[in-house]
Amino acid sequence: MTVDEGRAAATPTPVGDVNRLVDGGDMDCGSGLLLLITRAMRRLEHGDLLGIRSAEPSVAVDLPIWAELVGHEVAHEHVETAGGPWWFAVRKVVGPAQDTMFTLGDRTPVGQRLWAYTNFDCNLACSYCCAESSPKAAARRLTPEVAREVFAQFRSMGGRELFLTGGEPFMHPQLGELVEAGDGLDRTILTNAMVFARGTRRATLEQLDRSVVLQVSLDSATPEVHDAQRGAGSGRGPSAASGRPGPSASGCGWPRRSTTRTRPECGPCTFGSTTKPSTRRSG
Image 1 (cartoon, rainbow, N blue to C red):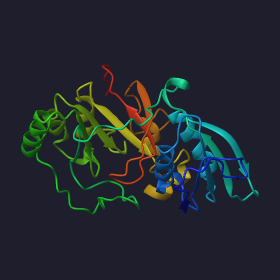
Image 2: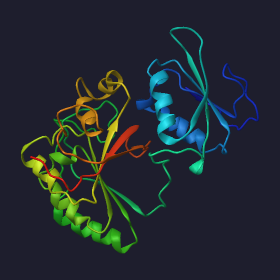
Image 3: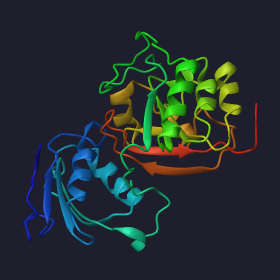
Image 4: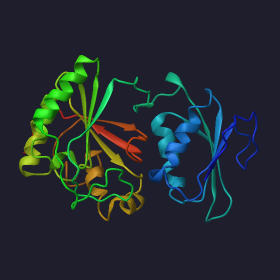
């Protein structure tokens, strides 16, 4: 993997001259490639071209989808042989130049966003998890008492965004109280959308304030790559919450909007489906 740190006026590639070049080697979009691409894009101006080379087959599917989600334009594509490598020239688009229903990943000013680990146990054991969460991990749960004190202090300092992550937050039996403790903040729960189909976790989901956002991350647009990172069959839960068939969130009747986020704080969250509960309830 290499990144051309200089902004050359014209670097020749099989997809034409580009302003910067990222060689992702055999990295896929879920294991860090999008982080490199995002960093390179920030150094480009509107209309500049980023060249991307990849030897990973899944990138040929995932990268154009990512570009569409964030509003950039894939100007050229080239494959050297049937087995790769693949080349892309992606044109940076800034502002409302292209219609998109997805966030462009605007940066939040330092001090206005708080990440809170609700717990460290999880139904999955993702290979890249910086918290080392898994079904065998100690729960180490954030208590509502501590949450109320910390979140109140954060609000008093001008904080505005609260992200509840883990672990899998819906495995915390007092998640509802943690969410209530963040009242007055823009609240987002990061979940794999696999454990709230029924029982008390479903009740917690149904009782969430309608301003709360659920962010469901996918490691790839294809289940094979997603499952390789998170375990066989794990793509079924997230796909359900993002509007595709699946058992975990079926029947909720939620309106949906999507976002792509690359989050260096805790590994590669790539294709995100952010879902807001509606006022309609279903059992």
